[in-house]
Length: 69
Image 1: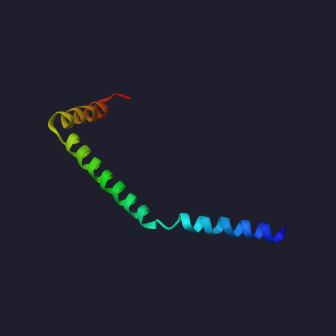
Image 2 (image 1 turned 60 degrees about the vertical axis):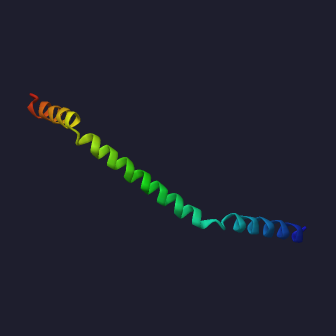
Image 3 (image 1 turned 90 degrees about the vertical axis):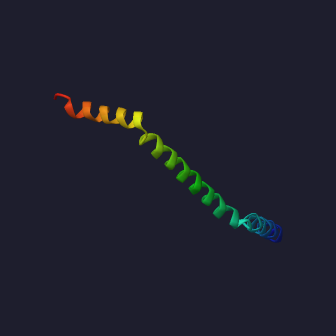
């Protein structure tokens, strides 16, 4: 009984080790996520700095600062 349990445990551990052999894929996924985040930030920056959006944001801030308490 002990030998069967030990053999089964050994098989599970070796299977888990075999599943972890694609460590390079994790790094490439992180890199692609960073590239996508930077691209989204650039697009958002361009939108916020465009004329109409910048004017609308300025008006919202101005109204908030002029509000009475």
